[in-house]
Each structure stands twice: as structure tokens, then as C-alpha cells.
Length: 442
Image 1 (cartoon, rainbow, N blue to C red):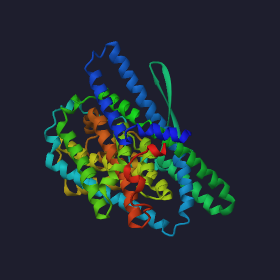
Image 2: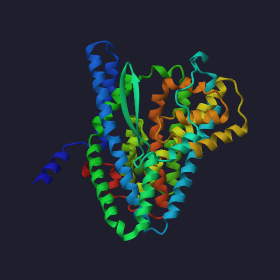
Image 3: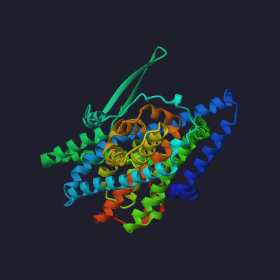
């Protein structure tokens, strides 16, 4: 009787995609209304705090699931991959397609930077240039590969106004490395590790159910996230760096709606179905600005596109730290050209090759770190460009980061789908996944 009642209740609800769209509309309107109020008034302050709190809760819930979900999924997937004859080919093909799509994205970024020339038309003074607090380096990347503990979790304490605040963060790349090592050890032990692997598989199933419940809150979370973004950032700051922002978003749009559909058609995969199923993950990436926080949803939609769970649990977490066509390819390419043009520094052909090399090889340097600033400063330092140029772009970074993360997430879903298709692992060509609805699973 309970099941039939739930079915009747769901029949009155619109589709999941419509719910998310309505949530975004409500959030956009709410944010615009609050921005039109007196910023010092009680209504504006209360609404702003409500938007921020609701958005933070939704993102924190997503991030809370990430460490245990990644760890259990990777351990279980490593054990599952032992039964596949083409496990080594899966890994190689995944890394190759990560590199191919990143190379295409960085070439588009370079071309747009040279064509639009945003650095020659920037409406901002050089006095605004300031080196960022965090600077990326190849040593940071190497240190990030070594887990600080078996869960890759670290804590930091900051003192401000005489008060101490402690925050806990995690490095997904470290979690993946630790989980791969644990999974490999379990496979090496053999039958004696079967109870452990069974527990990991069961724990992963429990966490996935928690994920499904959380996905049901996506329309509410979308409304809060978008309203908070509009209230916090607005769009006025785009005017000073309009050409640069336009170049970045043009590159993101070309990759997301041009390159990706072309690659899908090349492999005889319907782009409409791909976007219908993956759009919830892309939306959450856009609103939350976090590939790590979106990763559980990206895993879910990748499976719905027919990619086997064992491979999805390996490829998507790996992609969430190393597959960043937005943050690590398009953005640093256009930004490096912007900084060079702004300071009147001529780039040589070898410099453009170096930009491509850093984008393809060094994208993992952003793992576990905030935004694309680390990748940008890594590119600038490698080219010998002024690091102060990065400070010019920080004012609009939150707005750009929304588009960058959306493209990152789309690419993290795209590559496993293509590899699974190329190696004949796709489990279904239609059915429930084609609708893109999560309601039946919640």
C-alpha cells in the first residue's frame, strides 16, 4: 500500500528536470529581488543569510558523501576490474581520452585568446594587479600525490579577530591513491580478503542510497545556490573585464556544445540523450562550483548512460581531480594570453606549446585545491609571466568558475561514456536512463 501511495504522489509532481528548472527560476528571481532591496535592511540581510545557509548546507551534504563514497567505490572497483580482461586497456584509454579532450580544449582557448585579444581591451588599471595568496607549483602537485593519512583528510586552523576557526578538507586524489593501494592489496591477498571486499561493496550501496535521497533535494539546493550567487556576486563586475569573461565563456560553450557533441556523434552516441541524462550533474557543477562536490551525482548519471559501475567508480573520481577542461585547459590558456597582452609581453610559438603541455599534464595540480587559481599561477610561473596578473582576474573568478566547473563535470562524464562505447562495455542503449529522471530511484 505504501508503494502505491508513493507512486500516486509522484504522479502529481513534474519531471526531475522541470523541478530543477523551476528551482533555478525561483532562485534567480529571489536573488534579483534581494539585490534590489536596501542591502542594510533587515529583509535583505535575513534573505541573504537564508540563501547562503541553505546553499552551504546542500554543498556540505554533497561533500560529506565524497570521501567514504570514493574510498569504498574505488576499493570495490579495483577488485571488480580484476575479472575484466581489458582492465589495463580501460586505464590507458581513459588517460588517453583525458589528454585528447584537454588538448582540444586548450587549443580552442589559445585560438580565442589570440582572436579576441582580451588583454588589449581590459578596462582595469595595472595598480589593481596583486599576486594571489596561493601559488601553484610542480612540487605542490608531487606532494599532493602522497596521502597525509589513509583518508586524505587534513585540518587547518585560522585565527581572525582573536578567534580560532578550524576547517577540515580532503584531497580526492590522495583518497583515490590510498583506495587503489588498499584494493590492490585485497586482490593480492585473495580469498581471505573477500569479507572485506563484501563489506566495501555493501557500504558503497548504502552511500549510494544516501546519494539518491540527496539528489531529491537538488531543486531546493539549486534555488538556494543560484540565489546566493546572484546576491553575492551579481553581474556588475563583468563590465571591467567583459572581453576576458566573454572569451572564457565562448570557449566553454564551444567545448560543451560543439566539441563534446561532435565526439559523441563520432562514436555513434546520441548527444541529446547524453545531455538529458547528464544535465543534473552539469547543473549542480555550475551552481556549486565544485567538481568534488558534484562527483557523486556525476557517477550516478554516468551509470545511467550505460557505463558499468566498476569502471564508473574508477574513472569518474579520477576525472574529478584530473579531467578539467574548463579550469585546467580553456581558462589558463586564455588567462595566460590575457596577462601577456596586458603587460605587453610577446609570446613565442614555443610558449603556446608550453601552455598546451601544462594544461594536459599539470591539470592534476588542482586536485584538492580551491578553484583554478593554482592552475593559472602554475601556467604563469612556467611561462615566466608576472604572477600579479592573476590578481587582476580574481574579482570575477566566482562567476567564471561556475561555467568552468560545468564543463569540467561534463567532460568527467563524457570520457567514461566514450571509452565504454569504444571497448564495447556499454550496458544499455536506451530505457530508463534516456529520460534523465531520478524520481523513480529516490
